[in-house]
Image 1 (spheres, rainbow, N blue to C red):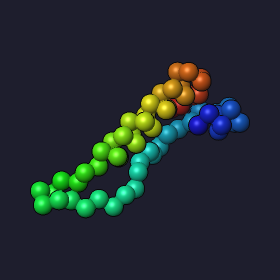
Image 2 (spheres, one colour):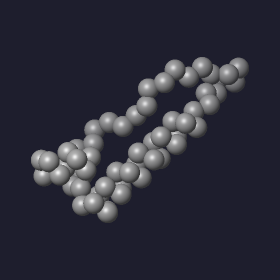
Image 3 (cartoon, one colour):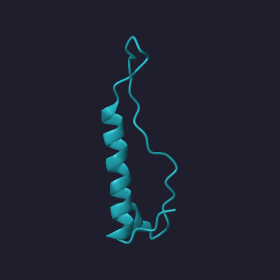
Length: 59
């Protein structure tokens, strides 16, 4: 994000952030996906830091 913003100096529109994976539910239809939650949490923190610390213009 920082590289794109530094290069073009245009607002960045974040339209998707996800993680594709094959999850196999257990007998209770529960899929263990803490890794996905951790990924999204870190991704959102990184976007927040880019805005607050680096001045990236995100929409």
